[in-house]
Length: 361
Image 1 (cartoon, rainbow, N blue to C red):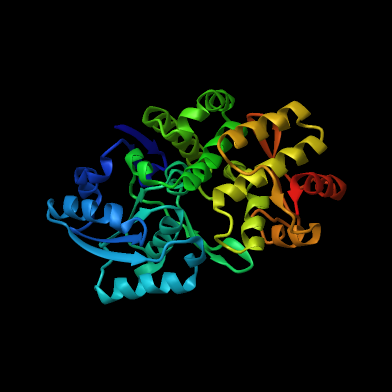
Image 2 (image 1 turned 60 degrees about the vertical axis):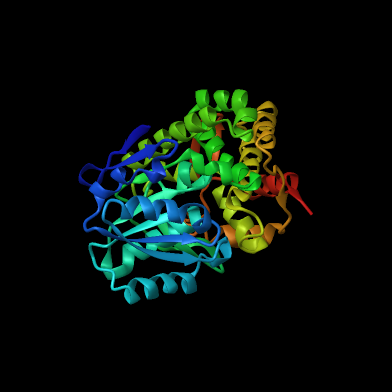
């Protein structure tokens, strides 16, 4: 098992990565404030892993309150959040009761936001079961819900006490979800880790084929990148915004198409291609670079063309992005492969051209 540390001084926490670690209650128990937890999961993950986690904790004398919510991005909203509050209150969960998120990004974001706000904050642990959650959303403390006008617009920064990433859970992950997670893995290579991008190009077939050793390495390398950025910029005041490569376009796609129509990673992949094309129009990337981005995304079985929402619709949706400052949309673009930049200096003509090239009807 690998152990990484997210260095946030007195709020630092470990990321445990290893096959079977979901069943290792010894990783959890020392981080509990009391021998009682509320496990938030969904209708897909619960039949697969809730019993195993519950038995492991109960064997250590920990009482488990299960809370099962519907599966899907469409449920990442106020109504579902309120059902979590209802359950926590009905079971008389206290300030020392730890909330454990067992599932993908939606479960983690919802459970984390509930933990951040219930009784003004209770302990929180992430057990991500999708690749996207293991390499991205479970690390760094971003929690929240969607609004009909924008993704993740309501939430809080709230760090977990630990992250437990078990690559064995990926054996039950649908192919489409696995590919969606690879979009976030590829992101790290594009924005700050060119040697990792080279490695991903060489090993993409193994990753798509669920090779355990390749997946474990990709998870570790991704988490190392994410942990380093979060330690330097916890609340996205600067460098952390670069982790949003493809997300300004991607969030617009998710909202414009209706939450759940495109998986988050699929929308990020299409958004990454739009960002690459825009970077080319600004003179930063060459045609060969853009082709390289398209090739690795295609190898991961991800979309490289975005839906045609229309220029004005994209502009309106991107105007609600959290990176907007002074009324100006700021884009994460690529100065070169392996180096990202945040900029608002984007001529409308370049943006129009990138969208025209990268969208399909």
